[in-house]
Image 1 (tube, rainbow, N blue to C red):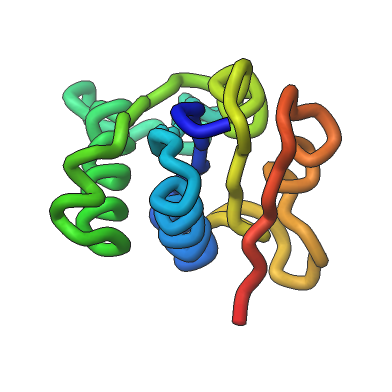
Image 2 (cartoon, rainbow, N blue to C red; image 1 turned 135 degrees about the horizontal axis):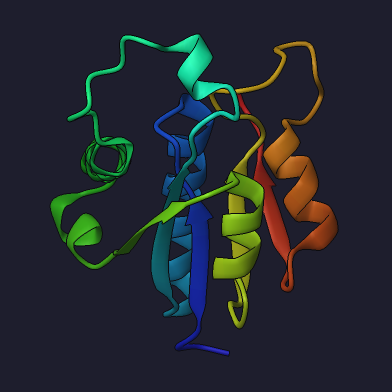
Length: 142
């Protein structure tokens, strides 16, 4: 069905840039709009791990910058301009699952910046494949 929405998870990692490129190509083929989502959250032990964090540090602004840079790097200017951008505070997998409600497709890379390199699939991609409300594409590395 043309005119739907494709949601893609972006965190600035190389796998997420590959997922973004794939999702943009799929949206061009289907006529769907592209919705790029990045999330951020404070670790539970933020205060004890990082006592010297300046009060002006704004993780939401940093996430928006990473999202904007990722789109600029991975897509043409015309493609990037057409993308809906969303920054969500909270768990990455849950943010993607929530944003994918009513979408035609959810696209993620096989791993992001967190997780263990030896794992076959990252925790976010593994979680969304099990719980997303729509079909999921996991874009693997080369």
